[in-house]
Amino acid sequence: MQYDIASKVILSHCRNMVLRELCGLNVKDAELIDVRPQETASVRRSDFVLRAIFEDGTEKLVLLELITQWKRYLPLRTLETRCRHILEEGLEIETIMIELKRCYGVVDYYHDNEVDFRYKVIKLYEVEAREVVKKGLRCLYPFVPLMKGGEDLIEEAERGIYESEESREYKSDLLTGMAILSGLISKEIPLKLIKRRRDIMQESAAYEIIKREGFEEGIQQGIQQGLLLEAQEMLLDALEERFGIIPRSIAKKIKGIDSREVVESLFKVAMRVNSLEGFEDKLKIALT
Image 1 (spheres, rainbow, N blue to C red):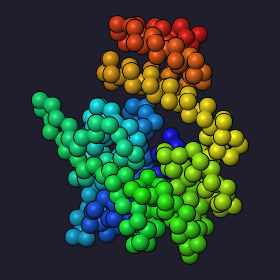
Image 2 (cartoon, rainbow, N blue to C red; image 1 turned 60 degrees about the vertical axis):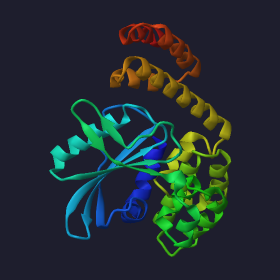
Image 3 (cartoon, helix red, strand yellow; image 1 turned 90 degrees about the vertical axis):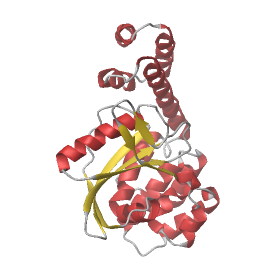
Image 4 (tube, rainbow, N blue to C red; image 1 turned 135 degrees about the vertical axis):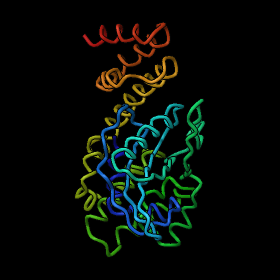
């Protein structure tokens, strides 16, 4: 997942500032715990767990969930991740969801007959980009394109990273993260960033994402890949809306289809069948 990797390289350098300045937590220091494999497949969510020491000396975990589209079962999946880490680490957890772009239907709670789960939601598109740049919060500059008024400040934020006295690894990771994240709002912005800063961006571990998505070798290839991913997600969304949580095995098979036409035909099947089992039978035929 491209946003997963982009966010991880940013957090590897900037976790303390993200927690303090963006999430509003009084954190003294934090470390990123290795990301566990998710139990459900989705390109629309990325979760990270950090072990944090607060200014008062207490130690907690912070679960950051980065989302680009809302699904009604997402809080339940977040709760699953939260419970797993409580059992594994034995610490309290602060749960925070960050909307990388505006999502329809986002809520800050999950409730059923037995569970009342509440968490903090940060709407990145409501954060004032100009304040971030004015304060010189360089670690947040990769998120500037997604912030309120951020498109007008991209070049200033880019220069702030590139011309800083930080290490080349720091600068290459933050600039690459900015390019990938800006793809959420524009196809042109990543291309311009890459053209100007390829010399240093190609040193980042996340730069492989850019090559794979086709930004460097040809935008048309990237667009086609994006259309395939979008079709896959529409199919998964339709199945989830009709039949509830989709087994990982089915999601994995759908993600493995490399033909948009096949995915679109399966979408029509998903809208007609009466059960998930019926869809799975048609899926097996499509894959043979």
